[in-house]
Length: 88
Figure (cartoon, rainbow, N blue to C red):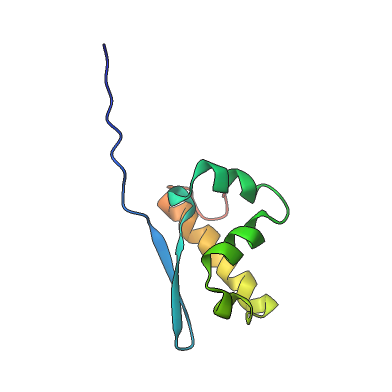
């Protein structure tokens, strides 16, 4: 009988600094399958980031700041999964 032991890795994150505040976003390769599936819905990324970014920071983000966070988060997630830039 074959056997395989899955070894969990440490959660890979992206540290975001905003003024004096700092927080960490789990990269997509460290998310659960349920969380990844929800990203496919129009409100999925927004809902996930609202869940993981502290409310006192998320509620003050401008559209430009939010967009920059999403862009770099997707880019760094792609790098962690070995996906070349622009193909994620």
